[in-house]
Amino acid sequence: MSLPVYLILILNLWSLKAASFSAGSRSILREIGSNGNSGEHQDYAVELNATNFDAVLKDDTPATYAIVEFFAHWCPACRNYKPHYEKVARLFNGPEAVHPGIILMTRVDCALKINTKLCDRFSVGHYPMLFWGAPTKFLTGGWDPSQVKSEIHVIDDGRTAEHLLNWINKQLGSSYGLDDQKFENEHLPSNISDPGQIARAVYDVEEATATAFDIILEHKMIKSETRASLIRFLQLLVVHHPSRRCRKGSAQVLVNFDDLCPSDTWSADKQVEVTDNGKGALGNLQICGKEVPRGYWTFCRGSRNDTRGFSCGLWVLLHSLSVRIEDGESQFAFTSICDFIHNFFICEECRQHFYEMCSSVKSPFSKAQDFALWLWSAHNKVNERLKKEEASLKTADPKFPKIIWPPRQLCPSCYHSQSSNGNSDDNWNRDEVFKFLTSYYGKTLVSLYKEKDLLDNDATNVAIDDLVASTNAVVVPVGAALAIAVASCAFGALACYWRSHQKNRKPRRSWN
Image (cartoon, rainbow, N blue to C red):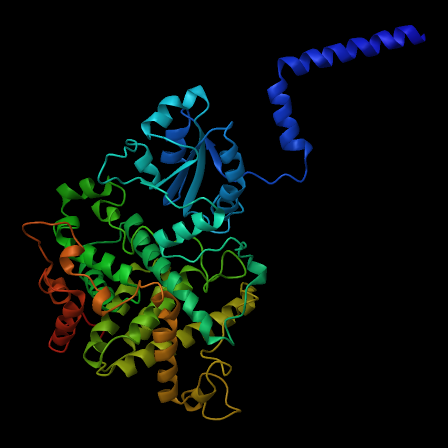
């Protein structure tokens, strides 16, 4: 090929490339900007527009809350703010989210004509402007500065990543940090030698409570023969759950139980009405509130996705209940927990074994210590059985093998001698074990959470009439009367009333 022809071909190719660049310069520049610089940070916030706004916020997110940032791509302040917003979005968005399922962080470009009406709907008056609310609340309307009350809130202090995350933490009662990293299973800490780690389990107790009731509703396990046992367990939660928001939610369910789940629900003409509604009316009441994180076990996270989690959280809940009751409540607590596991724990083999342990108790409990120690001993028996099964089937969690609890590292005084091992009664100083359980599942469990004022007692306890919608008549189930008392009583008064009546109350059903 001669040189002039070669030059002509080069010029023609260059002119074609120039024409192509001119026709689609914005898309090419965007492509170069996103792919040409390998060091550019990933975008975590979800880009929304008028065509996908409702679909994403309605159907495509499991998140409890959403943040929508309204911005304009030409705005220098918006461009400078984007790295701050993305730092926070990294924590909550995407498959690698550090804290998934809690907040969906999104952005809407108001400079695009397609979004003009959408931005007007939210009275966007400056850029960037951030809004907070439940995802579905963004669908039903907008935001108007003249509104006195709105379920969508303007984030008034989010000018930096630090300020925005602090604002979120105040809303959720959380303590997320910008340096939080994804909780990789293979780097889990040991729970054996550090008693303070149980403080992280209070969130797992909340999640286990919420999960247990989700299972009950999803599998339609409330039957005529199980209804009373659920009411008794709710009574126990109302007074003794370590989390105030779970006590509050339990009371709300209990007060409204007859309306939400009438005793004649199981008649032939009403069964279809209930089951056709999925979880039914009870599903609209969240036992521990909307703020409880889901799917992110902390203390109870296993090194594999199929280990620990819910079962661990449920055990911690039961132990925490056992160390909070008083002597006169011990038999009621025993019966309530045994009935609840027997009727509502969906693992057939597990609940059958637990039922057998409950049935082996021949004398009623009269002291709280005796019941707490029985539950502790039952848990160790379960661990012994599962340890053998998991060893033979090679299904054990290598990071968290089943052990006799508490290990010597946590409670040296629980053992009679330095050489004693195993689960024989002769090896244990039961008084010391009870002291350990009371401290571990009592004060230590709630120590982290108590700082956030989400726990218990005195001024933090709200009146029962704050727990339910105002009504002229509240129908209270007969079995719930002791736990609720009078609708105007505060939680503290409710607890005293409930406890004082347990000594004379005869359980509806006994294991003996």
